[in-house]
Length: 120
Length: 388
Image (cartoon, rainbow over all chains, first blue to last red; front, top):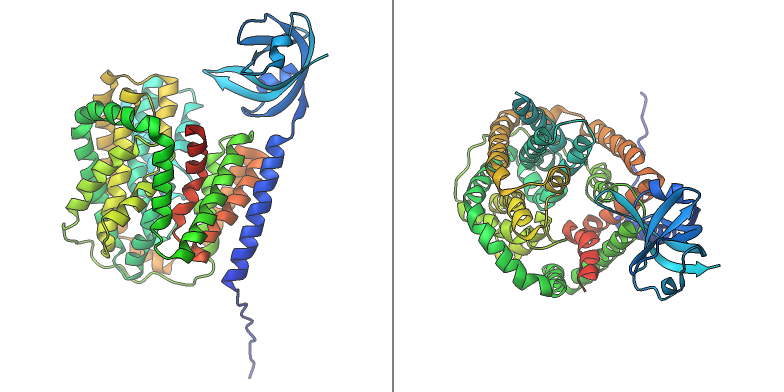
């Protein structure tokens, strides 16, 4: 006569809930970290990047108006929304900049929402 | 001819997306928008998708306990009826309620075009307060203090996930988020149960749930005023506290009619207050702006699609007893594998992280004994922050 041994694993629901909660908190922290870590990028990359990408772009300021200006590298430019940044008022035509911000899109047009501007 | 093909194609896709958990009608619409389809045909196909999806989303919810996010509140009562051999009756209630709600909502469209802007003008400045009050009401509906505390934890955790999701650069972020919160976590939990469906009885039912359909139509209109809370499931939870009932059929009627009228009144909210509360509608409006002149055709297609789908759904539910011999684990494994692949392709590495995190969050409510709808904090909390 042959007996078959069956192992039954009993899982404690509270332990699973605790593990899920810890995993969730860690996952959310990692997602926040990834969304708040800027990536060095060229203007060309910014123009095709996923919307909301957090990027750092260097280039030359051009076509400055009251609420926006362009940052250009070679022949490519991306529009920069100044928002309420005080440092944006220091930008002059032709000045070299490093801009930190997020890629946005409005009706198919890409622009950059500046969060920090460093004039070199 | 192109119009007929577009509607038929949309109908088939809507049936497919309704039957396959995790595939939302918005996802189908966004894929369709990338194809070289004329804008008019695209509008018809997407509206047909919405109509068919409205009906067919109930099958996985009732028989497999796997919900679509718009009718997540229907999972427990629907599946409970299926486990007692009354799954076909549940399908009848949902199909009838959806169809009745779509018809009533279409008739009320002229009224909603006047009422919605006036109501929105009152609510919009107080949106943050309305959302906070509604969220507190949602948490309080748990009744016991311990459960309220757990629900608040789940709600805030989901809210933090929502903020992280919307700040990140993830393609189509709500797809991995909702797939994880509702589909993947539901599938994982289904592996712990070995319940098989019993043979399903007749589809006959009493029509004593009609007052709940009427309430659902009005609540669906209200849901189109609120961002974040627009998910009919949230409104259904608030409504369940107001229209308390132990009859699962009446609750199903309420949830189905809220989802249906929300879809119809999304047209009114787009035309009157400029807010497309239905993702699929926002997509076609971006390709070709919807005007008042387009309404008769689009609503006609929605009615046609919902009518055909209700008929097909009732025919299909006759074979529900086959599910009792079906290996549901293999099916669930297949769906889970599909979701993982789809998220990886659509949303990439960060999307996978979001999917895994959302799955972990989605596991918490059933394990901790609170309602699953608290995970809708994912969109409510960011909405509150944006409204402040």
